[in-house]
Amino acid sequence: MNVATITDDLLALLDAKRVFHAVREGRRWRRGERLLLLPTCQLEPYVTITAGHALPRAMGAFSYTHSELRPYVAVGRYGSIGSRVSWLAGRHPDAWATTSPVAYDAQPPRGVAAYFADVGVASQVRDFDAESGLVRIGHDVWIGDEAMIARGVTIGDGAVIGARALVLKDVPPYAVVMGQPAEVRRLRFPEALVERFRAAHWWRYRPEFIQSLPVDDPERFLDALDAAMSSHAPPEIMQPRILTGAEVLSAAEAPAR
Image (cartoon, rainbow, N blue to C red; front, side, top):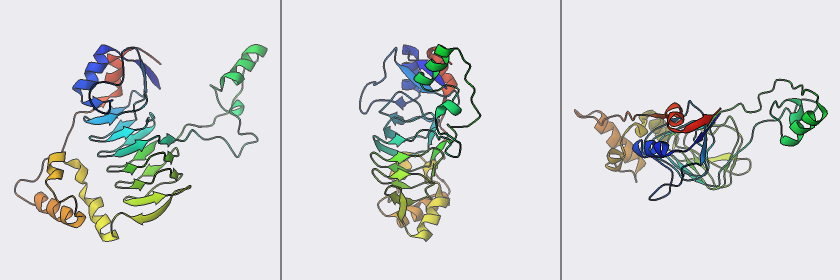
């Protein structure tokens, strides 16, 4: 994990790469503030991050979030993330004799670290991957306000996560999930239509083309997309230039490792 101090050069880079961090006009992040990120971070242009000071593992074009993301969260294209969404912390070894980080955390809470420093004894911890689990959020996913998402969960393309849902397991594509814990309540469309959407990969295309289709009628939308794809001039597939975490760190001030 890296901590990057924001510079004027970094702010200019974000502007140039069309990575936005305020709801409307202007900038939310300021010179001298810090960003948390991984060097492997990948951001497509035209994303909007309106909360927090962390960059996600990945974020696809035209997605936006009103919640702080985490460096272990990857978001597809055309995604919508509401306010106050929580990303649940790492695991504890509940099958061990104790779940306390004193048994496994090489960088434990300050009180634990202070104890070993005060008594002059070396801490002995056992291997346990508490932070495992990338959260994968597909394309065209809508996450409602105050949802809670566990580590290691995959949310399929086109899924809808209800407000305040507690998502502890994978969510199928185009499923609508609600509750605590979240369960599938229904599919957004009939199964045959879901299969067509899963094969269409419509998020490969630019917004102006998508807007030209009958988006208010899913079946007609797919029919029009199929017709466009089989025409003599099919729509162009987007190939946006990705902004990488390495580029962000290069434009930042003396990133701490």
